[in-house]
Each structure stands twice: as C-alpha cells, then as structure tokens.
Length: 222
Image (tube, rainbow, N blue to C red):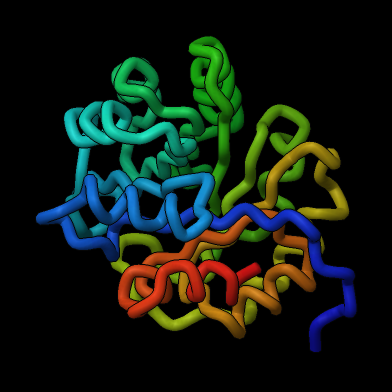
C-alpha cells in the first residue's frame, strides 16, 4: 500500500503538550527535552473552529520563559490573522494556521505574509477532508505543511491511513526546504508509515506523554 521511500535521517519529533500533565507543564517540558525532543507542539483551540478550548497567549509566554525548545504553535482557530502578533510576541517560533480557516486564496496569502513579517516560520495545515491539491499554490510560500491524520480538536484519536496518502502528493509539489509534518494518532507503527511516505516531522502526544519512558518513546518514533 505504501511506497518504499527511504526514511529521513533526521525526523523532527514535536511532542504535543495537549497530552501532558497540565498541573506540571514545566517539568513535563523539561522531561521531553531531556528525552531528546527539540520542538514542542502547542495546540491552540478556540471552541469555534474546533469543538474544544485549550491554551492561549499567556501560557505560550509562560512556556517561552522556561524553555529554549522550538515552540511549534498550531492555531486551530477562526480569524488566525488577529492572533499572529500576540503569539509572535509571546515567543512562538512557528505559527501554523488552517487553510480551512480562510475564506479565499488572498486571505491565506495574507496570513502567511503577516506571520513572516514577524520573523517567524509560517505553517499551513489541512484537515482530513481537504484535498492536497487545494494547497499546492501555497507550498512555495510556507516553511511547514501540517497534514492532519485525525480530525483536529481532541487528542488520542485513531490514525486515518487515507490521510497519510496525501504526504507523497504534497512532497512531489513541495520545495525541498519545506517541512512536512503529520499530526494525529502517531505511534511507533504509524510513524514509520508517515516517514516512508516522506514526512519529516511528527507530532506525538499520547504516545509520548502516556508512556513510562519518554526517551524510549521518542526513539521509537525516529
């Protein structure tokens, strides 16, 4: 079913704090860093674009104060353009917004441009039902494309194999320097599927934070 593409030698693992112990985030972040993580994935949800509410700007600012990990912010929100400056000021390194949150091509390009104007990396994400062809025109403009392999909004969902098949299509049209990230149901098995298809970054929440050994869990994804 999956093409035999050679695995990337340097896959970026971005642990999602959505699955971490929120009563002790500072320690949770320190633990995944010690375990080998270089990035930290932070899901921002507004209760409108997705049916859940999570953290916002103040928490990102607090996290920035206690870690030097790359803050990989995933905006699952309506009107992302309104929140770019606050998140940039809070210390975001990457801001990824949803293609589906924009009403037209002009808005997508406007949001990308605004993110880059603050000197941070711009990412574009697509939901499971969105066809990869819809974002080909934006690939030369962004630094990261995020393929969702679950419906955004809640952690712990089952990996959708059909969504992973978007990866090689995107890779074919993507500049070499663009990171292809996958989020949703990532574990030691699905990570291999995604890497074989061309993914260069994996977001994992439950698989890492619900394990007894963060280092081993991260190593199993590489």
